[in-house]
Picture (cartoon, rainbow, N blue to C red):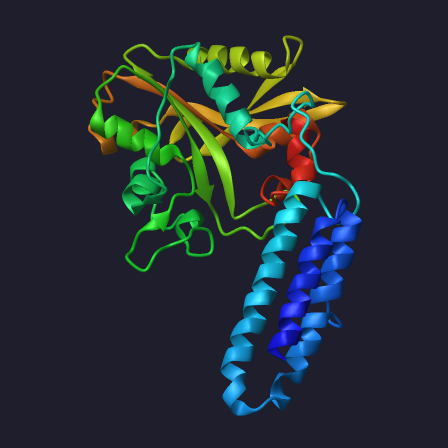
Length: 324
């Protein structure tokens, strides 16, 4: 059998000299290494040889098999692929550009809004998403029996903290840390245990603003919001203010814009309640302020005609690429 193996090697060496195409190389490979090839046929006969010869025969078989495999690989590199198409590299062809990402539409909206307020002197600030009841409720003049403090309306942790339900918590922290005058804008994620549907989500984004100084008036609030909304929706947009109630502002309003044939609520606002100033240690007899808050998803949905809030979070590239 040793002699038969050597003849196969000599035959393979001779045939390799005449290979000049990927097709002939593939035929050579199948002849010697295919399932019905000459070497696999010898391996099938291996069990019939005397035990004392198996070590020598096995070693020789493996040497020839490895040599043929390496020869085929080397020839394939010289000739190209086995499908008949010669591989080549044309340096003049344009390259494949890498995939480039883009800013998410919600982040685009946040950056646009904060940029508009930055032009009016508002500083962008951030705060923690896991909060205390004091910062999320008590300091904002929300009483203990208010429905929003119930576990059905707020996510509480096992350690007695909670996931903030509004970014007004950042206003409280900034007022505790700084003295007036203040002019801040606070974007970020907030959490409320709402049932997810086309217009609700348990997590969404809010932007809240605050201005505090000695002579801040409600007229200042109206001026800031008029300028902001006209920059965002166009100079022809019509705006109206409706009386409303929020625990942390007094007086309070909801602000609508004319959209289509009707009016659409866009944000809430008001003058800072004196009790909030007491909670943060400000002298309510000397300072006044206003605050406002809006939902980022709501702004993006109105401006871009998006009908389902869930599209923002599903990571469907067909949707997201529209805003790249």
